[in-house]
Image 1: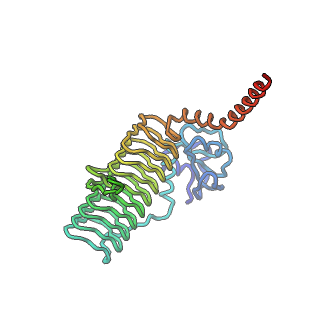
Image 2: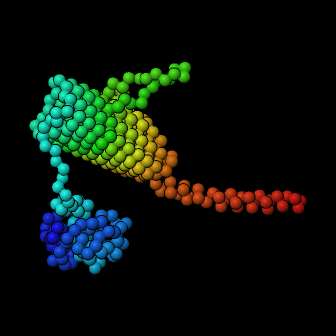
Length: 343
């Protein structure tokens, strides 16, 4: 990469503040950057790094001006702009030529669209439909009557069971299981009897699902993942869960059955959500939070049991004072005892 700052600014529709003729030879993170590198800053909490980075130019948001010594490129969204530059200078993406590998096993009445790539040792059962331009990675299993949309990327070792519906432009990373049985049992005299899980899973468009995620099929009806939802690695989504459009589910989250999650919700890492509750639109569930009741829209909750963020912070502050308070109580008890003995 050998481009002037002003040339890069044109590509990302940015405004140069500083020397637009500086030559950029590489890209890097703001901490690791060296002279000649282009970097970016998208979060205000890292703003102090503007003064210590060795980068020759920094992509910033409109709220950062020229009060630093480094050349800036102002854009509306620094993360998107930097990603665009990365796609131009990064390695060529891996592509999979259309066609069916001879080791793949294809059932009867399977409908395969145009320009589909089916890699080695794939198993596709009867009556499956696969849309145009989709890539099915090595060792993938696709169950009976499942439908997969256009331009999807299913990485190796994914299991998609029967009667699942997946939209367009969906990415599923290795090791994920879609449509496993929901965890449903009836206990009679100490014996657990399996309850049939006869529902399905429906996944919308533009969804990305990380590695080793499990999304259980519904007992009845469907488990639903809305359009634009992004799910990190090692997430468990139980039967009949509903996740609204553009929500983000971070690693190691567990969501119990029949929970409804609204649109644009963020569930941070290792949070747990009990079943049969509702999380409102635009809510934020903090890391390791234990959610035991409904969360209203536009609310940020943390802690266990989860409560509004500032309430939880006060609670945690009080809890840190408990040892000190216990010591004071002991001292007061001693004083009272001495006074009683004098009487």
